[in-house]
Length: 91
Image (tube, rainbow, N blue to C red):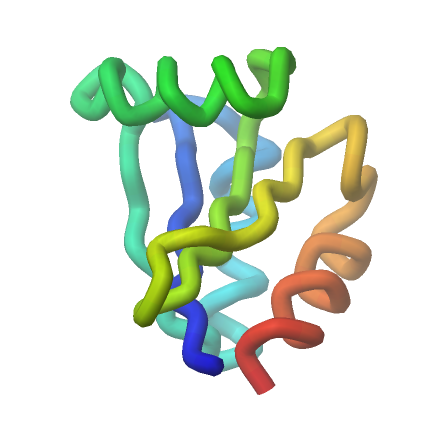
């Protein structure tokens, strides 16, 4: 299965910038969704997770549209933890 990496961010969020830099460093392609520009989409993510925390990573199966959602503070606390979880799905 192939997954696309979707990262929900907020301009000025240092944790978001750190994760994006690490994704680039690891040569992991990702789509960025700034939450103020994609409010309806982010609201759907929050409805599923019940947590408003950034960055939030949605690994979307390109065939089914389904996939896990990793939320900062709940599913990962460091960029290394986030990358490890992401790599389980994309490699």
